[in-house]
Length: 69
Image 1 (cartoon, rainbow, N blue to C red):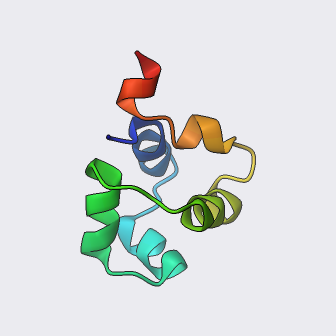
Image 2 (cartoon, rainbow, N blue to C red):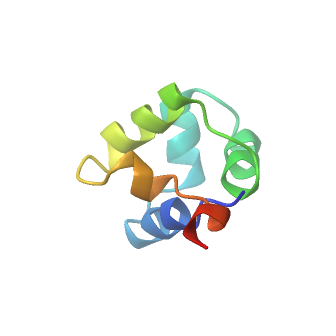
């Protein structure tokens, strides 16, 4: 369950995994795991969206590869 939209937006806007880890107060490795196959809690998703991508919907940012097909 990879979050390719979120990964793409992070790259486009040059938001590092370190910035996400600071925002969520979790280890950088945990962010990498969540981006590549883990899951974000609703609270984490809202926090990421509100901090870095307020103009994007949660549905867009956190769409998985499976949901896009």
